[in-house]
Length: 319
Ligand code: F6P
Image (cartoon, rainbow, N blue to C red; front, side):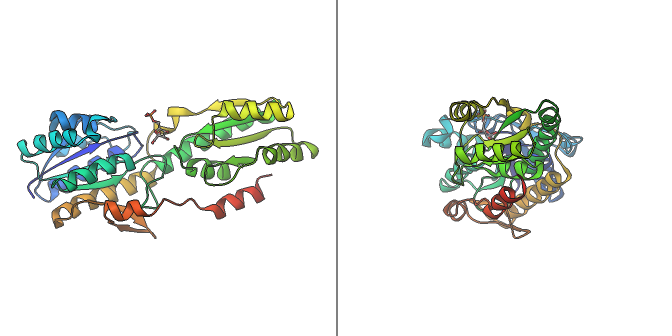
């Protein structure tokens, strides 16, 4: 292994830069040449490579987003697209690739390995929905960003005695909603992994009102429904007015927390070590507080599980 490349793909996540830095510096430390691929798989198919030096990743550990840029590509899902990418990698005499992204990106990474190109995945998505790992880079920062926003929303909700619905990201996973709902004291949390009941949401609001608490925060994961849909449902059932706040891309930006920088550094460094060892078709994961490296197939078999004990706990203490 002499030359490797690194790319970021899918939705950006805080800590991706810290992971790129770890990959580049760990590779150079091991006398490898490193190339950055711009714009994810789109750039890979176009051969948009830049040589990375120690200084190329200076002053980025604290920055959100990704200096390599990211993209989603339909063409790369085709065999032709994958072969185009492999040709670019071979023409540039690159021997291994690190893909930092979510499960969609890992699917692509798995295809490259199947077609003979050694690829390693590093989990990076705020959704924390990747199977094969308990943690994905960006989740902690996103959770902290969301609770900072909810704390502010709560001040207004309290002062004006309003009911606020906060819609958070997560695609089909409820991790962001559960963590932020529990840690911000939301009165109701709606996640796709648990059966939700609109009447229960209203009962919890009424229960609060009966004891003089007129404000309420409801956190809804985008995988359940939109904040606007929930608002409509509540209005139809109870005639209660609610305010909807969609946090959107705010959740994907910002300086990564210490935890995200740490995990990104560990995982990025491990990805390079795995390539040097001759591993391919595996992802770096975090299980039981340890780095692990399941194959993409093995990881895909198990579904990422949310902690439903935390959900029960939230329901019992946030009333
Ligand atoms: O995967 C991260 C994520 O931010 C999801 O939470 C969200 O559903 C999706 O990406 C939004 O993606 P896009 O970049 O296409 O708007």
